[in-house]
Image (cartoon, rainbow, N blue to C red; front, side, top):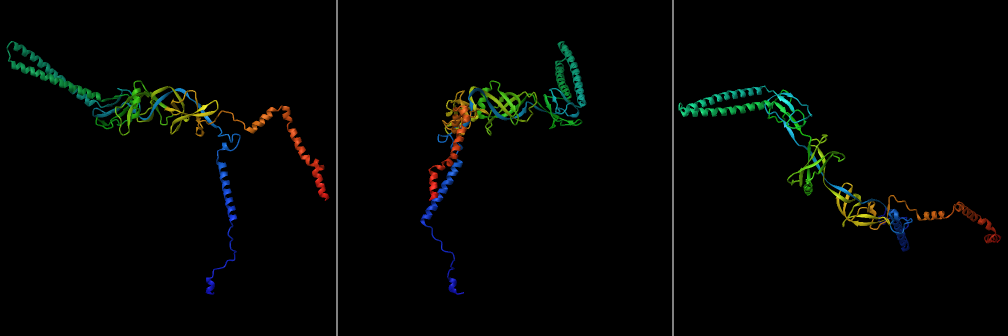
Length: 456
């Protein structure tokens, strides 16, 4: 191959592309703009609110929205303090042996209810009975010696009066009597201690309540130093619930503590009431780590539904707001300028935006401190679509008929039954006449013109 041929570019068989003319470019741009406008218009039509897409109300402003209403009413609203509390028994006593000995009997059943003073167990008393007998004998011996010394002292005093004995002997005998009196006092104390230890062999319940699981079996040596003791007794009725109160609400409790404040214990889900009681006491200092103050409520717990160390929800009725204007919580709206409600104007079915001042709120009701009167109707549902002066339709209102259908119905109601029944006949005859018009008009001018055309 010739090198000159390799240097030459390859010649394509396709004809060269003609540049687009100015007119073609303008037409293409106009078509593209029209397509964009058409797509935008379709998107606007599909996404605009349904209420503005034509219909009888189109062109006359926004249509009325369907809303729910409620009436503001006066009621007594309780102000509640909610908290999470722990059930705490009034007394929890671990029964331990007060003397060392062999556990002889266990007279309780695990989990049973006992009263204060009931016999729970006995310890082998024999060694303590012997100790008591010994202490009693020592006391009796020393008392006999004391009596003998007293008689001798009386004789010495008589002889001293007769100047027949030295005063030193009398003083010595008097000192012996006092010494023996002291010995007798010590013996009585020892005898009392022995009798007390003998009584400790009978283990009694110090408080009433429910006994727990037995910590020792029969035959074991028990003593006062045992960590687990014999059994644990927990007092269940009455019983307390300890809970934390925010420091901002301490003043409310202090003001209401002059009267018996009602307290309610609820279960974990707040679905059912476990027991009712009264507010008992308030601690004397604020916990700096949590900013709360410990409080206590007392419950009778007659059904034993509250169990020690159980977590419950506590409600304390601090006070009651009488004759308060209340509305549903859903009626109250919030904005940057404050709280407001929509008030229904029954005359023209419009709403008015009314600024209000809210008060205490419950789960479903809120107190309106000012700005609303009892008996006024407020919007509770559908308020997101409203403005001041908007028209509304209540859920129970009958729908208004469309304009065309209404006109047709009015026209039908103006006709008598006979005429209405015969109304379709003229329309049918008119249609038949229109259909037969071309045939009957064959002899008219049009037909003559057609004939002339054929003849020519």
